[in-house]
Length: 102
Image (tube, rainbow, N blue to C red; front, top):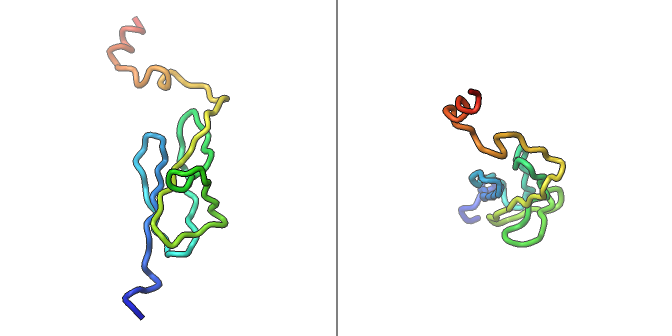
């Protein structure tokens, strides 16, 4: 046998496309990738994770991989989302808040 062992892993990169940095997951080649949890984008609903730069949605329960790949999040606008004041104006500076309250 060559230097390969069953503990070798590959890196799966997730690009959340929500303003946050990509993150990774290590898996054993040929095994399923675990669906990331807790990925959010205010005002949007996660449509799914897509393989590389394609329109092919990754089916976590069915697909496995033996190579390092990137999965990109795609988002749909949440038309029921009601923004709050910080969503509209950002984090209001305290001096401006004092001026407004006078």
